[in-house]
Image (cartoon, rainbow, N blue to C red; front, side, top):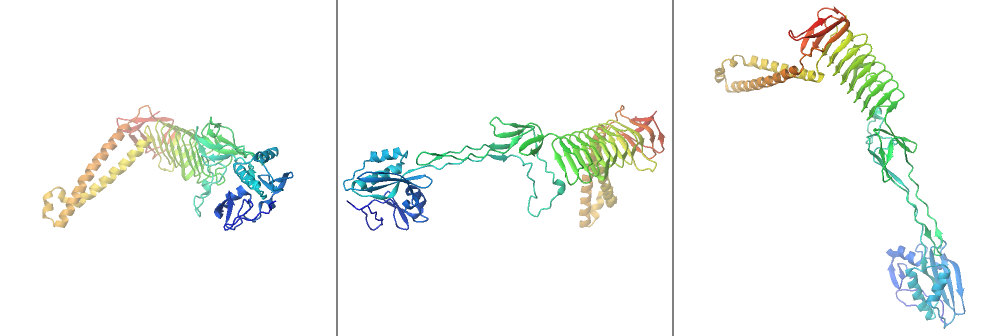
Length: 532
């Protein structure tokens, strides 16, 4: 009977027994080949040898079953997790025989399915057994599969996430606390986020076929709420209406109206919103509201900026303090206007008075009580006020029947014409007699003659420019012709010093005039006539 002692395999000597690993420090022997150390990780999985501690597999394995007769002993071993199965064979007699099908049937009885590598190892081991050699060092025959846990669901935001505050764009940058209210606007039909659903994972099994459960991925922790739809593939949130994005816990909602139940101050910041804005209290100095639809303010507006693509309604008054600005594409309503600049595409309706303001309207301007004092107002479709002007004689100008944008262009043209006229006069004064007698230039020294020629060329250019500006001005004046149906209505009084213009007809009132009166254009005289 041959010895069952296993000799280590080395590069320079042979062994009489079969071993499945090399004992040198720099390699492993797999299927008879010496494998370099850089492949140890793969080899450890195939052979079960632990490169970290250098122990042989048996020291890390447990015997799960054995089968013995008078000729041989078969041991089935595995690691603690039953992920790797091994077999050791001890030959007990010189005439021992062990058929491959017998060994495979034994493994099958233990519910162990040999791997491809395991079957190769079995074939090699049986060759050794046939020679009377024992395989005392366990060799790998089967392996299980570790479970693969599912992937967690994920969310990719396609817009700025509303519940994540935005800090300064660069380290050390100044923080504008008025911009702290970072509203996330979305348009109807806009994609908000996409979701990737959690995966269930794949269970594993050990060498005996016992299932090892896996952990399912955690589902996406986000739900859709008001005004949020789900795409047909179930992966994308879509806004059903224009508005601002909000997170209510784990629920995404789109609010169509931005409501501020407080003053617009540093606790709120500037507001830039695609829809309507409603403020229950005041809008304080230095703040701005921009709205894609109407703006409604329950209190008063100080030196702030309001810009709306619809109407603006201020339940209190507007005390602009010389820095307030209101721009709207619809009507404007307020209790009073003071020291504020206003542009309204619609009508302007004021309960009390307009004082020290510039107010421009494509529609009508109506003041219910009080009056218009120290203001410059333009109303495209007429104006009504109890009083216009004041005893203090503060300049008050009222223009009706005129598109204020055309009027602004006319003012700019008049200014350019005046500049050109003044420059022409200055050059003509410098040239003096040269204008009437060009021959004088030939008598001048060369340097003065050249300077005179340059001035004459500049004069010609300015005269030509002045003529073109005058043509543009006359064209604008033609568009601003007076409409005989447009009038100014004054219930109580027009104070001396008030300037009124209806279309192109202009009049400065030298004396107080008591109402009620109506004022119409006097086209024939280019003035304004009073009718009672």
